[in-house]
Image 1 (tube, rainbow, N blue to C red):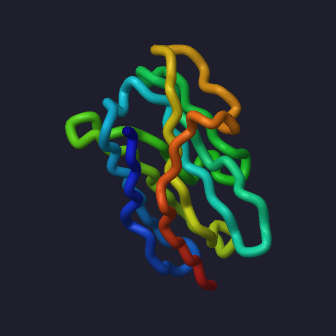
Image 2: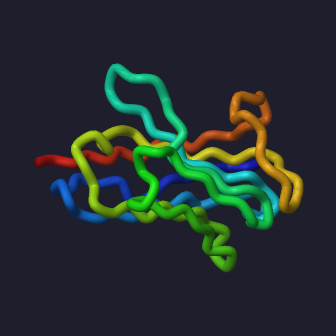
Length: 127
């Protein structure tokens, strides 16, 4: 059974940086599609970034492109999200997600029942 634990949520000032980690157990991270989502108060959950199994593909939401970087630390079976130039609009609960993947193929819609979610990590960006 795949389990995900997010670490690193914090409160930071606008313009600052933060790194989130997602420790994966029950599967090898390089065999899975992995993603970060976030949900701001009163808003729907939105995709932040994802990467396919391998990985060979990464994709970002337009709002974070150039500021955030998704990567994996295979030795620790951990997904990372490096966030820079943070803005108050980046405030929210950040969720790690994992889905079955085919090596070097694109990922699904993240709506499938097979997607596993972490418990979330709070990120607050203040002016």
